[in-house]
Figure 1 (tube, one colour):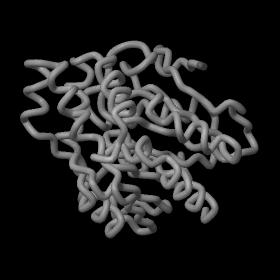
Figure 2 (tube, rainbow, N blue to C red):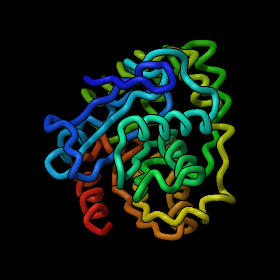
Figure 3 (cartoon, helix red, strand yellow):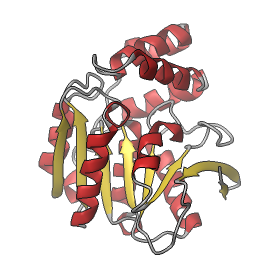
Length: 256
């Protein structure tokens, strides 16, 4: 479980069992609000033979030290600094939900730092309902339980949903609240058409947090986007159906 110092703080990340080989392309996976790099376990293991898989804990999340950030732009700054510290070239950035917003922000601000984007259950604008923002402050545990029900599709096993709840409850309430506030303020609808990188956009057909219309907008307005909708999956599509998500990622990588 390596860590690297970024701007004076230790940032934790996970790699595949084969570590990081300089000659291979790297995928940097960025988790969503209140999450951590463990959410990418099926990608870290399933894709490790062909690429470097690097799943970071954003500041204040998982085992990364310090406070979280309060804007998507701040998280994007940290992500770029992380890439610079690892000295990786030709990387693909993959983000889920809030992580997708962070990746989009990085692509508009520092396009030279990446070769492609993978946006999973995300959007160019991420509005958050007041019941979530108020609920985190009023009753964190009950709100986390409700979020899990919204995040996973109806076909997901109870075991996976239980694991998802454990991950949310491990987050600090103030960090999760700031994450959702940052999502609510994020809006790059007018900027994404300037992104020239090839992009893979993935969404579950039953995603109620970021419905498929969000991903359709990304696919329609990014210059070089491919859309993949996974039938029967919800917001946590990469956890619910890792086989199809990983197959889509490998096909995308082969096209670069």
